[in-house]
Every structure is written in C-alpha cells, then in structure tokens.
Image (cartoon, rainbow, N blue to C red; front, side, top):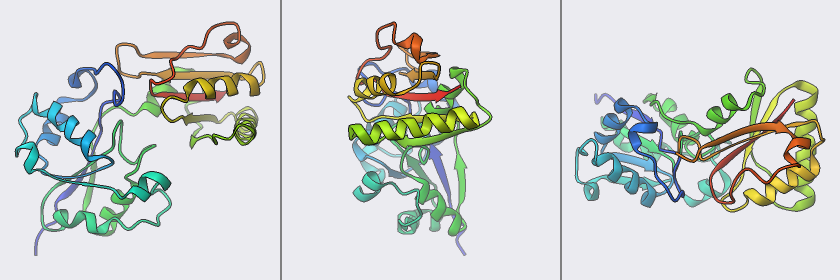
Length: 253
C-alpha cells in the first residue's frame, strides 16, 4: 500500500501586485523556501503568479524540476469568486498526486493559503483522505496588522470584505463597530485593489469619533506602514495609505 505524501501550505510574500518586491529572504524562512523548491505538484489560486513566485525561489534554491515541467493546477474559478470556506467544494480530486505518494504544495497569491484566501477546501480534503497537512512558516498579513495595531489581540475576528454598495457598506461598518465597542472584539477586514480610498472615506464618515481605527499597509515591504488612532484624529490628517497597496483595516476600542 502506498504511503500518502504530504500537503504543504506554502506562504507567499505579501508583495503581490506591488510595484516593489522585497527580497524573499526578508519575509520567508530559509526552510520554507528550501521545502517549496522541492515540490513538483502544486495547487494554487493563480498559475501565472505561482510560476512567478517559483521562479523567484529558483534563484535562491534550484527547483527539483524545470519550471515548465512542474504540475500546477488552479482552484476552479467559482472557488475564487465564492470562496471555499463553507465546505461545499470537493477538492479531493486535486490531491491524486499525494495519494500516490507525492508531496503537494498549496499556494495563494499572497500570505498563507486558506487564510483570507482560497485553500481551506484543499486542507479539509487532505484530512479526510488521511494526508498530513503541514503549514510552513511565513507572513500572514492579518496577524501582522493586528499585532501592530494596539487593539485587542486576545479577542478578534476577520470578517473578509465589506459590501461595495454605499448604504449596505455603511450598515456593515456600524454593525462591526457596535460589536467591537460592546464586546472589545477587534474587527479586521480587507478591500479589493484600488478601493482603499473609497473604504477609508466610508470609515471616517461612519465611525464614531472615539472609535480606534488602525491600518496596516505594504506589510513586510520597505514602504510598510502601521498606524492606529481614534477616528477624530484621523480626520485631521491626510489618508495614510495609497489606493493600490494591499492593506488590512481594523476597528476596536
């Protein structure tokens, strides 16, 4: 009987989509990079960005096979659009190589796969198939932003994306603020590229003056920024982030 391989959750640098890329060794441990270099089967969010990342790894640790010979499969489009955290997508067929004894890597475009990104269905399927799941060490933007915010790190929740429609977004912001102020639970959320400015203005217009609002942007990059102030203080100064650098937003007390 063939012993199954392992599923490695491989973190990616947080510079996806950024104009400036940080050296991989500044954000990822050598052991993570070395392990990733030896994997020949991959499940990813986007094959193009996966190949670009593996090309960067190859400059530090030669890949086990030429890039064009690696087996790279993308998660289905519906997983990207609707997510796979609800348990409805069956990822077992994607793990055939692991059942045959090969190790498989799981990769998202930035940070840790399955955390604020697709991939939880693959980890769940691996557990159901008796395949060991091994998370590798690397940057997770949510935890980096939370640690730097000065907000409650003992009780927090990541709530994904806020609605894009103005009225609905305002209601959601007020709902999260009420929860944060009553329970002390820090609320974390993110936004799609090029919508930072719209969300920032909505937060300043909707939140109460004394609510603390924090933002972490460009984390692990040379231009990284972490700031945390009451809303009334934010209103006295320019927006602290540009419109296209990935950011994490936090509200609390």
